[in-house]
Length: 369
Image (tube, rainbow, N blue to C red; front, side):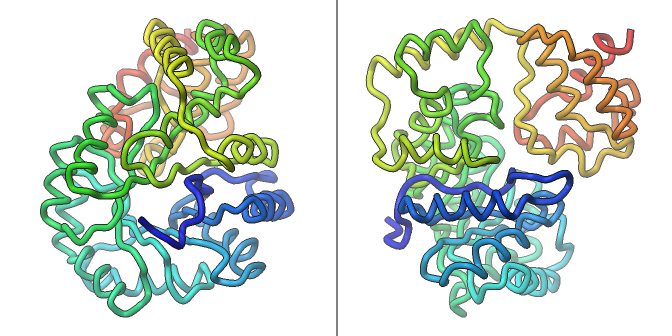
């Protein structure tokens, strides 16, 4: 498929080890070393990740420390960083410079959906990416995608030159009618496009399982909940890469332990996955992955994912500190749930298609009595 890609686990760099507001370079160096020493080589970033610190951290901790042939680097063209056709090339060149490389192995049209696709077409973003490939500055052009299977089918039909598609896929979302993971996977298979998986553990929600769900995996043995989620995604037809956003060395070791010699889930494990899904559906769970796309344009600076995390902690985990934590979040960021002005910018940006305005109303009722 892609011969230069060594194994089917990628290092997703939207979430990295942090020391306060800065990336913890010492920890990140250790993680990169362990990753490469175990035979893995795929790293994924975007300009907006961690407020621009993801690309520079990869430059300092990966690019400066390893020869170019030792790693695969994927970056993205994000719609917030260009307005016209003339903006695309300078932004792309700035990304190469920031990352300290002469070319990207994969370059993805970022967060494609019905609305963004119109802008990318108007600005000839796809055509320019194919030009960059012809110039040797990109090896493979792909897309990352957040919309319905119908929209994905249209994009792949319009641009058959696309070489890979990155979609959200995990066992909890697989048959979710809003995310449409299964249907999007089927469209990729129909067009014979290799699949990169993002959010295999749904922003950590499939790692820290509530009691009513985790008992099914505990009955199988001592493997981590993350192992079942990542192996589920990696075992789906057409998937060549699963991205994991690892934030510390312990998470890295866990991921490497079962992906170094990958085996798909067996029938008994799949039955436990089905039971865990059923358990989640019986809970009043806000399916936020904390990607934070919603916060960028919020005029009231509401830290939406953090407030949703407080709500889940209280509802699902009966966390007695949830009310205190809620107060700490809005005091730090300056935005209570009740301060939402219902503008809807957050919902347009949400890959999960959550009814954020209604959910914030629920959060305010729970915590601002």
